[in-house]
Length: 208
Image (tube, rainbow, N blue to C red):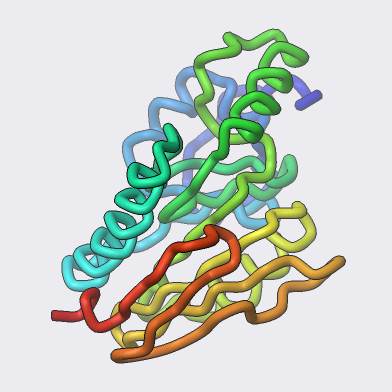
């Protein structure tokens, strides 16, 4: 269970000692929701605004996955800009996230255990089946190294690294405690990630 929120304090990027518990404070949460913030090892961080080109290409990828889910008559969808509580001092904002029905049930159970509304998911506190990060210019190490380590430690089974500028997609799967490459490609390659059997991603359709 998360500890009680700390006493209200200045909401300033770069300050330390922040945790997921602080977001229970309504005043802090209001400021948090006004921007693209993350808590990185207890440090309050603000992510840069997304660039149009990268977001448009990420949206195309998301649409391909969601079209696949509809064709499979599944209710789940990939959604974006979701806070994920990996640990008390680690709260990243995922660019894309897929919760299966099983994941949703575990989220409801965890909400109930914490005395929260079962159906008001809010910030995700269980490992999602798939998490997608769109590589941000100038923040490549943050996504490729730091978040990769975090997500593996949190037990997230599938992590996709999407780079709309270098025109690459890496589909990673968790193998014991580390990720390994399941499928990767660039430009006009065609990928068939094992996370979603039958899904075919023609990368060329993402860049035009």
